[in-house]
Length: 444
Image 1 (cartoon, rainbow, N blue to C red):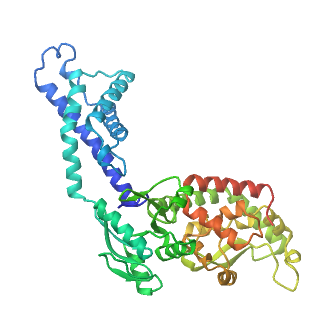
Image 2 (image 1 turned 180 degrees about the horizontal axis):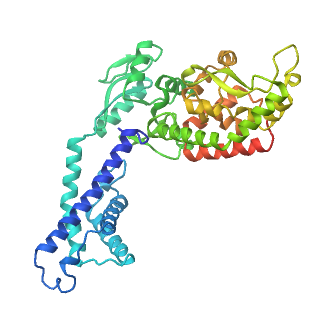
């Protein structure tokens, strides 16, 4: 099966919509050509063929109404049930109604022969186009590995055999022991070779009702693209959307929303555009801070702190310097006058926009941790490294909603919630909340 957020899914959807639009365009062109060249009684006196012009408004109306009608009739659904297949006649009736309304609103001439002929031609061209599309670009069966205990693997294989699902090709399963199924047992996830196979395979479906640790470990192995989880009754209480099926059983997508497929591309594009714009807008503020820092405590104005980035790789994070060099004084005593103001309004983090542009950071994401501190946290909280599956951010959900001194385990829950529930709207909300917090002077 194809993940909803994958680039392939988006490309296929775009190709289908563009192709369907072109089908309507071609059907309109054929109908107009026939109307112009063939004598149709009782029509030429009402609207001479010379006035049938294929202007862009007419093409747009017929193409758009055809696509909208197909969508309303269910031709773009991710899953089409045998008992509820979309009906072409329904789509064509909807298109005729929408086209008539659109042409009337734009006051464009529309012969009845064209209004009737175009849907009839579409009824012939549309299935031919869809068949050709599948022949040229067939949906490849995803090589899949099941993960779970023997009894759970056996139950899942029985579901797949009953459904005869052509989208899933089970090449093996991973678990603590062999199961009584025809698929190959790869071994336990504790085996390094098995982990490598699970990481590189097209798809993984976790059919286990096991604890949270097993699911987090599987996410660590798979990385941002994650895996599919066979939803239990308890999972159904927490998840409102179904993103896949195994037979007729619902699958939940467990993945890093901003680290895989089209969403990762969108987030990176927003980061570059947003950071560039913010740097341009804040340029006078940068100059003012630089001059004030030089007058207050001299050089250096900037400093780089070693932090953990994407994949746990260290990078240098830029900040405005707010403290003097260590000389036995406390942090409060070392802080400069300008630095105290920068910290209060969080202006010392402005240079991190450079890290965003260079790709070390994101505008929104888990805050980057110092390597030595992260090492200490990992001893008590092994899952803390999951934060490094995405780029760290200037603003983050944990920084907005959690207390400054909250335990690392609490901050990790906020970070995982953000990573797995990412949306562009969530990023926008967090950015505005971060700006509001900065303006309120709530920094430390």
